[in-house]
Image (cartoon, rainbow, N blue to C red; front, side):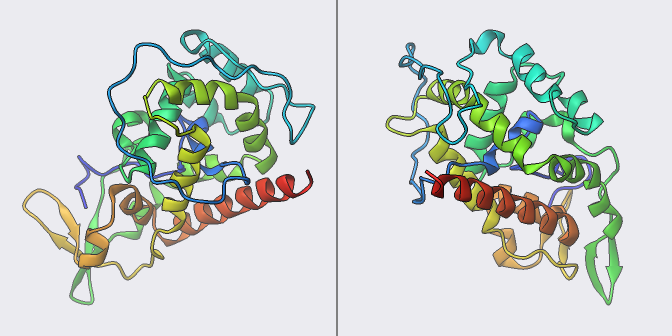
Length: 265
């Protein structure tokens, strides 16, 4: 587990993501795709991407008009879409980043492969330093370190479920177009989304009994099982018990809403 200089911001994911708020689209995979697809590492990016899916209307909600945006000029439209909802001020600030759609897609892809999204989202890193303390003769994370992630988790969990779902369905053609740029043959962004969501929800329960092991320049989990987890799941553990539970509860609620929508058809 890294020191304050290397501690990764927490997620979603995420989820967790957004490049911000939008990075958390990783929690909104369409319900029809139940199976987890094993997706290989990305090959070299091909020069020409297939034609984008034409935007018409959303099958789940005809009132939603999917947007097939020019990726190089999509940031303004994304900001306008999010601005149509009451969202936390922090989320509006994060939306000032550039290449929003491509960043969201890259974050989701990385999490699906078990990677931490931190390198793509440095502006979400907490300002406070990570702290550990001795308790009952064992080295444990200071609970104050978990609270560094409260603003990020609150920004994700306080946005209404329907807002996340509307944003995802509106931008689905554009997200798929950005994902095709990565060059995965026969795989959709929706499938990648499902894989990323499943990985975060399968993170072992986070407790306040986690024990650390001091390294020369960092900390590691003393439990070999936890230390062997992929970076994306370790990131969930660093949120702390309360925040991890809030994120996973939100993920399950969003999945349930999507599932209910699919059954109506």
